[in-house]
Structure formats: structure tokens, C-alpha cells
Length: 443
Image 1 (cartoon, one colour):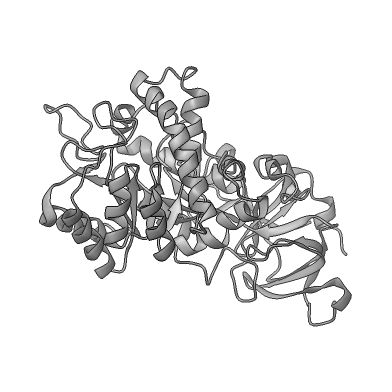
Image 2: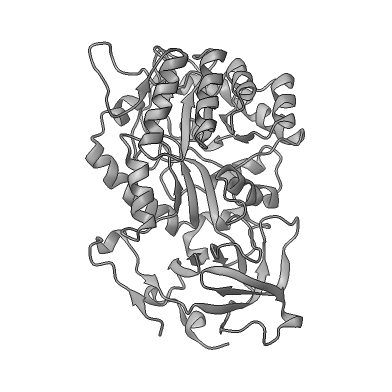
């Protein structure tokens, strides 16, 4: 049997022990989805050494160069670990932003640690956190890197930054928020806020450029920032080597963000011909977050969400869907990000891939949106998101073919192995989960 490492300081019900595979091993008889190609390849092998992919080849050409322990996956799909470009680790069932912003930082850290582990179990080996409470995502990112807790690779943002009267400015005037969101105004206000977050260790800056359905007085069609403020903010972040994600649901907020040089457009609820042409011509990537739309439409009544939120999402549905469909048709780069942590629970992230097919993507295109394209968003395309020699061995071994049925990726019983940097970290076929016979037997 494989040995495993025990994390004594971690609650057992929240963590799964990491299975220690040898430094070198080979997965045999794979159906390979590499995250880039349009077709999968059957009867392949993939060799892993010291946490990275060392070789990939056909079973017909399997030779002694594929050294190390051999593990027969018996025709299962092997694909890159999934990546979600828009998560909120700290959110856990909040009905609205008032609830979220009142959450104590101490509770937020617990939420984020638990949710990171849940997403890893769901096959997500990397995420971009785009707005937290306090500086929790940086703390969780570092704890994962240091091996204190288990979770996906985290690209960390700090508190969302917005203007007076905008979506960040959600508390009544007689309350003052110091942990939830940053409310600033003017070019120098944005520069200072960004420098402060850089000092706190963030990888990415999240800026709110339009209204949001969860704010009771700020509607999604409103543009809540000036071009000058946004351009200065993006310039400042880029000067420090940080990426910028712009919450943009109004027509002008998208155009302001693209003129400023934003790295990603979040939501893109309202896109016209001009903004789609701008997106197509720019290096910016669109992150549609369709889960945030459908979670309100499907769960609004059950969760007793506010009337304004439910009505605005109902109004936005046709605009949102047609905007993303038109962008995809035009060839705009789209990455998967579900805005998970609001209504849909952490671990259901792969629902976003299913929704992307509803706007015209093929299942393979949706997989690319959650692998190679998503890795570009994280600035890690040379390390993760595709199966190629020299990349980190962040892999999924899946029962079935997700290009035929994407719902497989939402079924944790189909995730036989989740491998991060060469080591098994989750999956129903892990030996200590009682399903690892084919993993432990010699090929």
C-alpha cells in the first residue's frame, strides 16, 4: 500500500491525507485531454517525475524511457486540473453583501480554508480569488504553499476597490467598514488603495467599475467609476507587476476597462458591437460568471433573496446570455469563472462549464476555458492548465469522457484521482478512501 502523510493539526473531517506517490511514475492507458487540442487521444501514457510531467507518448511506443512505477488507469480520462478564475473563498451562503461584509475576519479565514479544501476535492487545482474580507486570501494562499493546509493554488486578491456610491459602498452612512471593501475616490485615492494592497501581498487587484445586483441602490447598468480613475488604477497595478480584474456589467464600464488595459473583464453582462470588437483586439480575457446569474434565477425564491436582486437578474438574463454568446461567436477569449461562494456552494464550480455550452461552446471549448485559457488569466500558462512536458503534474483521472458529458466533472464519484504537483490529494480511488485497488496494483 502507498504510505500517506498525516496532517495532525487539521480537522480530519475537513482534510484528506496526501498519498505519497514515488517521485517517478507513469500513468498507462489514458484517454488524454491536454487542455489545448480539439480532440482527445486514446491509449496514451504520461510520465511524472519530481512533481512535473516529464514525457507523454502513445502506448504503441511505450519504452524503457517511461521509467518509474507504472499505474494502469484502464482507459480513464486524464486531463489538467481545473481552474476557476472567479471565486470568493470567504463567502459561505450569504444571502446578500450586507451579510458578507458583517462576517468577522476570523470566521472568514475558517470559511476560506474549508472552501479551498472543498474545491480541491472537486478537481480544482488552481483558483483566482477576486475579493475577500480583510486579507484572508493572501493568508490562505500562503498557508497552502507552506503545506499547513491543503487546497488549490491560489492567486490572491484583497478587498474589492470601488467608489463612493458604488457597489463597494454598501453600508449605511453611520457605519464604517474597515474589513469588507475599500471605498476610494479620485486618481490618487485609487493609487493609494492599490499600493496598500500590494504592500499586503496580493497577486491581483479587483476593481468595481459598475453597479451590482446585490447592492440595493446601485444597479448593474450604472457605471460607477471615471475613465481617469480606472486608467490610473490599472497603470498603477501594472507598474507593480500585478494583474487587474474589473467588475464590469454596464456598457461603458466594459469600454473604460478595456481602454485602461484591464487583464480581465468580469461578468460582461452588457456587451455591444464596439466592446466586443475591443475585446477581440485586446489581450484582455472575458470571465462571464454565468453561475452568478443562474444561481439567483434558480435559487432566489428558495433563499429569499431581495426583490431588487431577483428582478434585476431576471431583466439581465437575455442581455447577459446574448452578450456572452456574441463574444464567443466573435472569437473573444473566454475563461471559466463561476463567482462561486455566493448562492452556488463551493465545490459546484464545474457547473460553469455546463452553462458555457448553453452560449455555444462545445464541451472541449468549455474545458479549455477552465484549463489553458484560465491558466493565462493566472499568468501560469507555462506551468499549469495543459498537459505538456515541463508543466506541473496537476492532473485529474476521471471515469468517463467529459467531452461527451460535461456533467461528469460535477460528480465527485467520477473523480478517481486529483493530483497536484505529482501527488494524490483527493479522489475516490485514493487507497485510504477504499477504492484504490487499480491504483495500488502493479501494471
